[in-house]
Length: 469
Image (cartoon, rainbow, N blue to C red; front, side, top):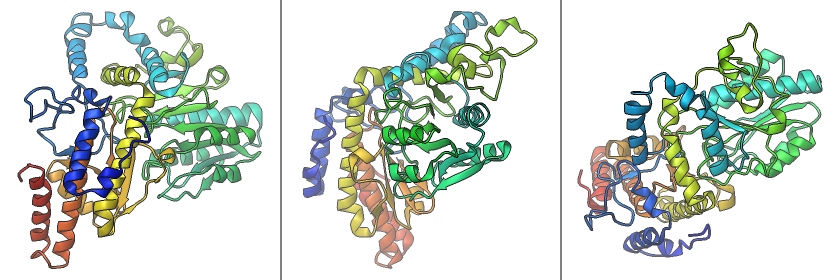
């Protein structure tokens, strides 16, 4: 499977042809066998054995892997083993035997499998918000205090994820700095030219998301980083919506700093800790603002003053959340085995197929697409817009079709390459189509009122897929 997989048969054929196409894509999917390694994916009902992709008895379609990934079966075994053995029998000895270095070990695993980062530059710990604060504060303090006091400006965009914006507003207030806002279109993202116009000798830090959380726009990391460096600033990338789905090359792009979460495409589970990347040459010159005992040179000396550890460990603060680090290890192993290039290729093929169905089924009902059409500018999710999408999402959730909603009118279709099949994508889009159709018919009085139209639409969607209400 390549990023240029031809989805035209689905676009040109009937619904039966589209379903046949989805089944054919699943049969030739070189990553399809990974799907059965996730909890909730059962053997194919048609064969009674492990089929090509399996089916989900409790769900019609899960289209929210870009918000919370599925757990793996291997993680169930790993967590059980941890409870019964690693913690259950080794108890406090676990810290000396493995746990103290686990944030660094998993950090290297993430760097190798998904970030294009050499060892010693990534660690796991804290939430995305806390890690963003640490790195952003360290960056602006370094440039403003140690390099150029005139660098008093932080650049960010108006449609970045809320926590990114809120944090930088707080840091600017703390440090007496100003914010330079790039006014980005929620239907697209931040371009190289916008960054070029925003940065200058006053710039200390630029904070951007690699993939925009609303539209899925994939920013040009290499060119934007080059532009920021030419202006003398540092750049901090939020990788939360790209890691594990998009090819990331931090070292190759000469990225300074990066942070990302582990509970989306890395399937670390609700509240799993985030990771941080600090380029090796910056580690000894940046001072992280939350100095805790786990970031000291000798953790158990318990000395009178803080002496930072060498390397990436100095950016750790408190006791690492070991239990929260367990599940992501199994997904990382899958990504490394499959190869991030192949994961990305399937991601592109899935989103292309979803867009084909959106154009065929949803566009005639007034649905618009706010995700980029060009695959090289699109991440792992597709966002569609319609005034009824809040109600559509609520109805779908009640009947085990799970996309997610973003205000004011956006429905996001998150397609996780290792756990989502083409047939599941087909089923999810068919349900969205028929629920929306039912609502529109009900509103126009053609189906005996909203509830009548709604029920008819959903029954048509799920009944046509062999699922009863």
